[in-house]
Length: 311
Image (cartoon, rainbow, N blue to C red; front, side, top):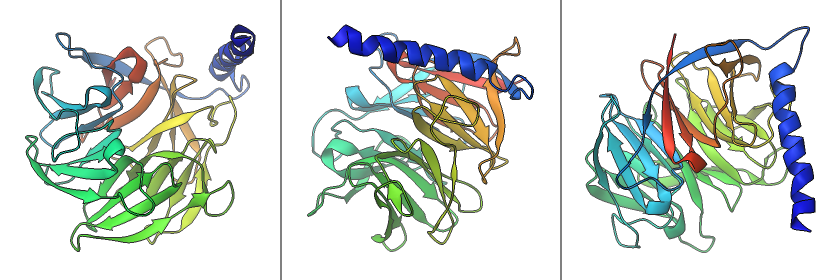
């Protein structure tokens, strides 16, 4: 019975991969070539389903190895430097963390999902404080993003289908956006968030298969993408990041591709390989882009982070 149910899905996904690679024969998608530089791995103590990555201004790479309840630090060249965190509920401990980000001062914000909180650490992993989200309606934080210019921390609350805004200067929540649904204020199990240089916020609305764009003053503006297997569409979007030109990169964990859009939702490119074809990834869940536009892709089921540069 289970095999019967799985086979059509496998066939559909395989067909989708073929279609995306060949979509729009008359007007083919632009493949933006990226070259693989190296892979971040922890060979002596392997990562188990890593879920996020962030890069500091000095090039230090932070990888969230959530199932192992730790954060790994790598040098800009890919050498493992150190780690912090362990399983538990005390300060500095994690319970299935899913997302992390850095602010302009190098502080690390970890969405400690199972403990219903966001923990804040120094660049070296020293615990500073946490933002408690275990109230009458416990939050399920799955990702964070910081707007340094305005001193705001955005937190995705997956189970409650909303985006929370926390004022880092006041130390208080100041807004929430979203509700369970498909229209208007609707979100369904949002997972990731990013913010661009002008304060626009991008929420990966997973089950609605789109990215929702939020204005700096907190209003839904437009959507990027919709369900489908053609270029510019998503089957299961998961991660989002913004480069130095405010271009928006979205990972699709089922189709194994990364597409690039402008803020209004126009498709700019699909990441490609050296042969001029679409580049394939293994369950790409999250993505980060550093100040030199180097791209870091978390391949969850492969237990690694692949690093790419421009040609």
